[in-house]
Length: 319
Picture 1 (cartoon, helix red, strand yellow):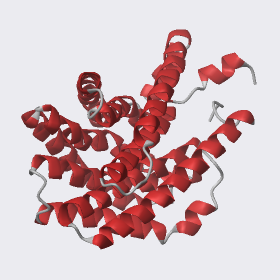
Picture 2 (cartoon, one colour):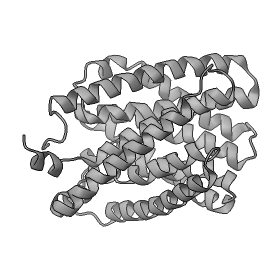
Picture 3 (cartoon, one colour):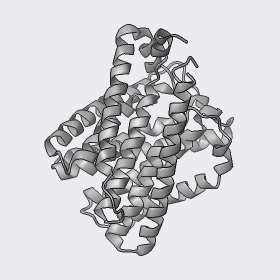
Picture 4 (cartoon, helix red, strand yellow):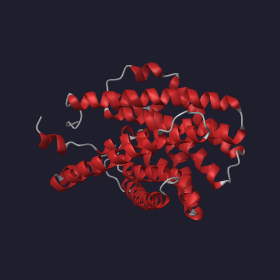
């Protein structure tokens, strides 16, 4: 396959790789802050995610310039549309990862990412409301991606001083998380199973309550109150539920959608470590380190499988 065809088929879900690596970097940073790891690697991982973001953004911008019709098709695609907010989420995550070492740069990334994410959210919701071709079988957990980004904003927004703005984004995310959760459960229970390529997106179900728990801690002054526990244990139950379905996931052919495993697992890992930080319960420390080890193995597997797939020219191909 020639370079022209590969560029034309360069998929917007590639930005989910940046999300996964950025989430992993936050998990490493949280472990380092709690002195649970003997080395400092979180910031290095944030840098790697930043470099990858620039490379992916450059490739997708080139596609946009040379093949605008291909980008336009993704903008109107019932599934790929939901992946465009991964661009803004990546910026928010990078800003969050840098806020303790490069505050000015981090705040700029957070501001750009938050503004872009609001624009993406409005566009995606408008597309859902005014659609003419979406069907129930198009619904899948990837539709949560715009929601996750909104709930993510307060984690850095509150420390930066944007408290009311953080409440605004958190409210949007919480509202539509509940709405979409009902629709997704209806879809998976009463309609045909998800296509194999979309099965990994089930892990996205973990992200809204796990990220919501972290955001609520910031908004609520770090208190693990009743609502915080509801969010955390919702995420933990969904994690356990998906782990019981391990056979479904281990039998799948590799797709780029495998990266859907990474960020949600990073979110529940950081949430568990935060539970240890705020409660002092050593059981959360043990569970958090187990999750971090599992997340590290998943990230390593995803990197190897992605590089192998690129070498075999199995990505950037026409669906």
